[in-house]
Image (cartoon, rainbow, N blue to C red; front, side, top):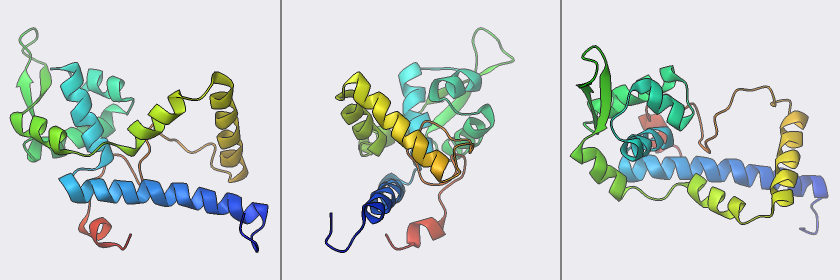
Length: 171
């Protein structure tokens, strides 16, 4: 602890570091490959699961179908995915990753969440439960426990495109 900082100050500083780290990583991802974390997560998942419906893809990434639809529309405009009629049901469409989509995945940096989950996986079961309880208590203390949230470490909403403003703000 710093000489002039209280325990409470140290707790707030740690929270601020987490918030800032997520924000910096999100902006660095946008600047390096031009994709938001949710866009890259959907693209990676589409590659992993193979040709699939929007509903199946939304289930796989644990996002709402509406959020995934918006993300897929942007990825399609960028040429990273394509929608093709299903061979089984001509009324349905399947999402497929294009060669350009595969290339951007290969060029993309590792995600902050990947590192965090790897480190979290090294903890004992009781440590993970203790971490969860502490974070749930912090959310309760900040009166944000009822906010809807996805299981992704990302700054901002999940279904919006990166803006020039977001890219130009100082880190």
